[in-house]
Image (cartoon, rainbow, N blue to C red):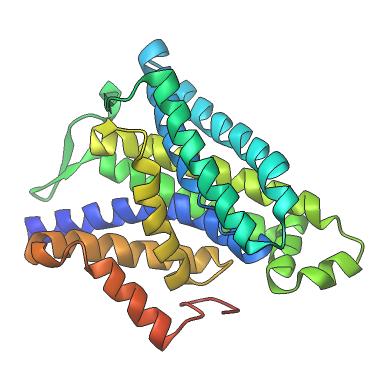
Length: 286
């Protein structure tokens, strides 16, 4: 029982980290039709910025805020100067965002060096808690709580605010939104900044979770995020959340019970959904 509960917690916490990266990517893909490979670079920059700030100040809150702000700043630069000029051209988007990913990774090496950096936790997040004889890691529970709060915040934003309504309408029909006189480019920029901040937050939360961070870490998790986006459905935060949990739990249980399949399980799920339900779990369009 102890093993099953810990595997479940590990899977859910990993799923929450993937969700932070995938939700913004899904909205960007669904609204802007941009396949943003540079999203993983924002994830890595969030990790390095947060770890550096925490080592300098010993303030976890300051490090968390700094990581998010760095992600949003880099997201603004990417959207304004690299991605906006290639809206509508998918081949150029692919080349530009992939190039942006490589540049972001190399810039990390310039600022922090080529070697992996260890990440530590603040004292209040170290150790474990015991519930009815079951030992659970504090930090994994913390990641789950943060992920749930972000999900609730996003759903409230999308369902209860005017800009959320415009985002949802834009995902379904951008031309209709433009015809109503709404500045779709401003919505694009807002969604991109939101996604960039979430990606950076995910990177910062992952840092102590994995123990070490490295410049190329963004690509590894970007691949998982793209799988989640396809499984969950383009433009759907709810779909991204469900798919992230599926991927996280499948990875945790497969790694323990069928380690030989741990690398293949995500690709098998991706192929299954591409064949059986290409629009994804909650997707509106293929």
